Image 1 (tube, rainbow, N blue to C red):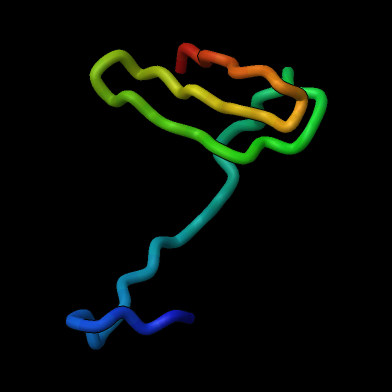
Image 2: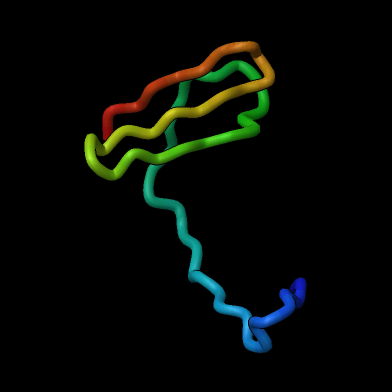
Length: 54
């Protein structure tokens, strides 16, 4: 685990699968969540961006 200057004790989140979203035809390389509207935007190597209404 990387060490960040100024943060001697790294914080870790527990990770578990909540849901699987199907739609992209290639690797997803970015996701951005908008908590105000409960939306997730994902960008993929298939040259598409998708907006997911969660």
